[in-house]
Length: 251
Length: 154
Ligand SMILES: [Zn+2]
Image (cartoon, rainbow over all chains, first blue to last red; front, side, top):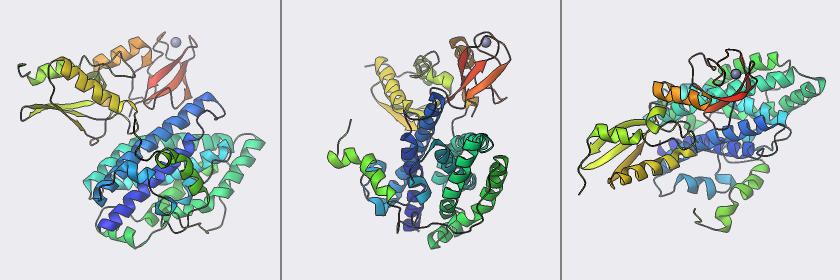
């Protein structure tokens, strides 16, 4: 169980960490200052959640590593985030589509984790849920505004959805470890979250006048760590640069 | 040797410590001080972060230590508690009134500002769901046309 729990916590913390880093790349580059500030604030929320998830992961591992060690000193194959969150930002519409797909999954997950049999997990989930409910409200409203917007914004949002839909599937991938945690009442099966996600996605994307691709294909390999995309390594070279260049540096 | 303060006195001291980002209100007004107690002969202060990524969390801890040291208390235990999660319901009425005087619309159960904190008009509109910090949103008054921060209700 200990290994499954550690793996589960890495998956949570790595998703929030990598997405936080991606969003923070917009800082100083967003189309308008309000969006710039909003994205930086969402990145900050996700980073705070990362500290809680990876902090607990480090505690559960009991190998003397800290949350910072896990974030800054692992290489790509040890990360357990889904491929969706490591993909490059693309244009603002692609970033917001990715955000909506992740938020819609995230809110379903946290809603279940608040009643986890592991009190530490339930506490982190309850804290995170308040923030993530706000994230999904915001990303959904932007997806609708841009999807049901001008001809140009509509075309870009449809392209973003076509591009990213097959990466969302991995969020619901379920393995033996998930079953073990589910049996212990610690976490839901990811596959069980799909119905709630689909309901929200169908409603929001419908309001956005966007068409969900018919394919059921899903890219895979991030949450198992077996096959990340080529983008994760590049992201890590930037995110981990300081600790790599000056090991143990603090301020 | 400093006399051991009683719990109420410690609360009063903490009520003098300003929030680093909104200095018109105190940490007690903000509702993030959850408990003050003695653990043996040391004062133990339990704090709840507002937002999980709030960059002020560490500064607040330091400010609390400094304030206690100024009152002659060197041995302080600070606990960070995330459960139950902080809510704007824990903000004091005094704190809400001070926020308004400062030009920040206080959190409201309506989920939006009750009125413009500058001119008091009721007609207000959302500019952005995030303001200058994670805890605030950015609104505008349709009457006086000033923009203002709204302390989000969570
Ligand atoms: Zn006004």
